[in-house]
Length: 283
Image (cartoon, rainbow, N blue to C red; front, side, top):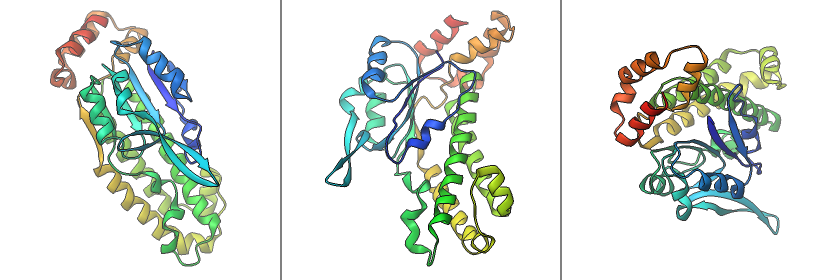
């Protein structure tokens, strides 16, 4: 198994479900009951966990609607953080790399990757719409569609590479941050025809000229703020054991893989002796 994915089908984050991890063995869940149930049965295993959900400093959230108002309730809390023992957890969620992430590592997770700040503004430009006088709704929607597609596409590529190659969490962070920034920067110089062909959005030329430069600049500014608060708690040099099976499938002999593992700079820097011994054992 390459990874276990919790991707909640909830308001505001449904686009996360479009993540594409082709040719990988990913088990997907949309609700915590089955997700945590599997983790309970795999306590002691070294799994990769990917969570795409709403979040706060205290844990994973689920939205609820009460009297027409959208609210959020705690869904996975610090009391359940022991389910992640021995795992690498990557949470694409607001603020969970605070108390919740630290609790997961304290309770035995090898590493927790996530954000210390609210990231929703990256995907919802209307939150800053007051800064743009006369901003048409379709322009705001187009920006959001473009950013969401770029984020999901680059996340898919970076995470799949992390699964299949012996690269560390630190490298995963750098790959993801740089690729998203690069792709969004390219939007600056795209024509309305190019934007439509690539992202399926329709924008008037006058709106492209008036609003896009400022909005893209603001998006990149917030993205830099996100990257500064994109952190790993625990083993930042963690590499996934799953790459070993891909190496074997590509015809490499165990002895060759073992030699590459022992010489891998990230493997050498891993602090957990138990995990290093586990990696050696699966070669």
